Amino acid sequence: MDPLVSLAAASIALVGTHFALSHPLRAPLVARIGERGFLGLYSLVALACIVWMARAFRAAPAADLGGATGEAGWVVASAVTLPALVLFLGSLRGNPAFPGSAVTGAPRGVFAVTRHPMMWGFALWAISHIVLWWSWRTTIVAIAILFLALVGAHLQDRKKAALLGPAWTDWAAQTSYWPRWSRLFEAGALLWLAALATWLLVTWMHIPAGGAPAGLWRWV
Image 1 (cartoon, rainbow, N blue to C red):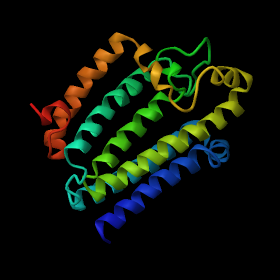
Image 2: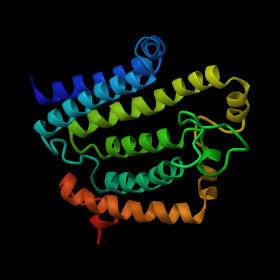
Image 3: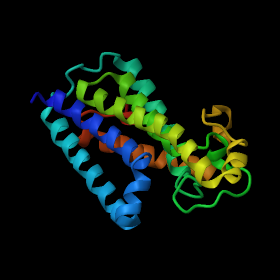
């Protein structure tokens, strides 16, 4: 099979199995094999899809689009990944979307920007790679991640509302699915410094991992 076709099939499998197992199939499977059994099955399926994607990605041509958007694309891609990291890192603490987490108080930090900061962090990462237009393999993976993040966030709203009822509805009414970008700088200086340090590290690692300098390292 052509590597790009294989990569597209693996990406569709990852997205499709995630949505199926997270929503319509979750309850009947948990009832049949238990919560631990379900988590094991979910992890196994996800790992199989990721391994398939990784193998197809390595076999597909690299840089076959050559960064068609040029230096402007690199500027946009590099800039977009910084707020992506602010949202992602800020979502790791006090995230009511995590299993077993409580929904209490008014949204603070990145949750005042959007109730799905982790998903939007992934979405911005995907957008940065689509904008760059570096290779078909990168673009295919980025589109899959973008779809998984944004559609997944919407479906998560529906699932949490069904599970938590008024607690989730009241909390969600105080924040937004779509990011309020003007509130991003209210996330706190410490978080921004952590995101900047991570951004410098990740973009530096892009040199050996991605085969091209990214971020500040592209111009220094």
